[in-house]
Image (cartoon, rainbow, N blue to C red; front, side, top):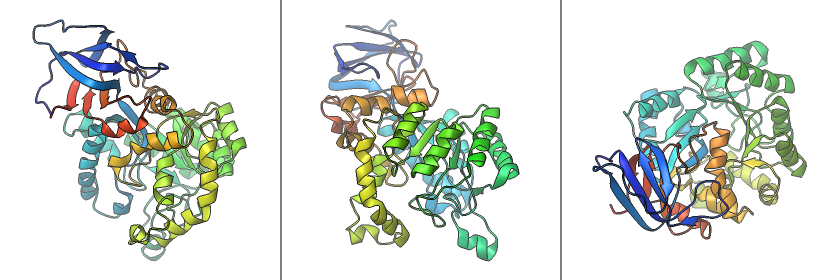
Length: 409
């Protein structure tokens, strides 16, 4: 990583895709000044004597990538000391940034709001990592997806999770998340494959409770993300007015149509599901894992595979989210290739990780290349609009005008 990046830089790649266009443009340069995009055009030059030109031959320049569903904290370490959990997250942040993800939405862990501190450390320059927007924890009913260690609760009265049942507890918990520094509120509208206490198709909250979560969040100006896999959990969340549905991987066409009709974003996390489905018969892979997780994926494998192709043509607004943390973070780019395998065009997949993701996160200065946008830019060797697999080969990363990774090195 260069020790210093000049304040005035021209980036010159073979082609440029701006985050929205139907196709890339050739021979278009980008001039960056003071952390923002100042100009785009042909054969640009720096405006100051100290400026420089960075040539990226054979590359496509794109907006910095956005992953709207990650977990930088390892859920399996929820009962470890909080300092250990935070330290374990530091290399994860570097990995995500070096792979081109200049912004992430971290959707929390079950217990402590540690991602708020990680976000602050990045903002203050103490850590290198993506820009973070965070939901501190996943709010869950007792016995729901976020109730992580029920045996500890039963035997030692030690609860691991951000648990709330009923109106009073829900109001207190949402307000506590806001006080902790939340950018988003996340709740478990339904069960999960890794849940120790419920099934993936279970519904976590009544309609009234979901309505109350969204209302309480709106009172603090916070958008809401709902974890849900099955039809009823998704439909209740959509009716409640959530801003994004996470997963929805066991839903049918009618539920997907309801998501689209209500203009709710869907973050499909397809690679996370394929990561386990494609390894169901690999005994070595499952060594040391919960039998429950393998059994749950085996039970729902056929339904998952039937669902995957439905999403691309559903009309729902799609934002890129990998659920990295459920698998190694350095593989989160594989959400691109998985979406294309499931019927998305490369253009749709790229928009999901740039302009559409920025729209979901309410960050108009991100996800695009144009004057005034933040200078978050990445480059890949080749053309991702014809070969989406090159998204796994990001070798230039600029974040707010600072070069974080450069392909010559």
